Image (tube, rainbow, N blue to C red; front, top):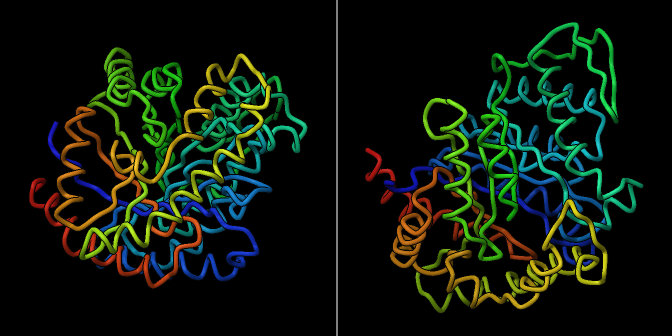
Length: 358
């Protein structure tokens, strides 16, 4: 399918106050983002999570992304992703309009269902409502962004004659992405409705198959082109393999542990028809290690030459994709280490793919 042409940075906080304060964490992220335009990282992205070191420093991605949009003039500014299930669509639509305006029309909006039982429990929302809340929330935000004086009678939220402000800078609205984990239905639906798709190969999901389902649904629905696929990877690039492993190994192992801990309710007996197989998936993730992630190309760690090879290999194995969203400062990695990696990857790895494109 040709090679990946675009690389971006994903800032996924996986720290608590005992590792880095919020101030330190975001200062480091914003300083890394300043390298985007120099090297051609084409998107910047962050998550929405709550209450736990796994993502909890980012309860509102739009706040961080607004600041980040001022450190780069070119990168697309992507929510990866916002969660309709915990938000009023009237508020979300207004915030999206703001982000699009502040970034000069560079906003792209990823929506996700949320998958951590502890968040549902603390917000007092039923896991079984996740699909309905996701679908309704995304539809309502879409209506509010594209139309004026709109009304919608929903199961969870309703409104009459509303014009959301500020109006989007991107017309008719910023592109929408659907975040999906391993559920084939999510990939199918994203393709059918014409959304781009963002996914995570971390669990060794059958990514080639899932991307195939997405592209088929996209085509069957009559959308032009073949959609757009973004996959997330931990990335660490160093002059020697030993150095790369030394820096990345422990933070990546801690990240995996933190994810499993945040999602532990699935293994401890929480069940929902909306999340079939999540107990098995989280159990499988609990057995993942730095070594297994690198082996299956879900983490890209090594020298520039090794990474070029890994990326080409992975791209071929899934039938090609468009955006690699790189976690560049995962867990408690030191700023200087992340900075060296971001620069080396930009200098030595990205040009190999730009040439393929050009």
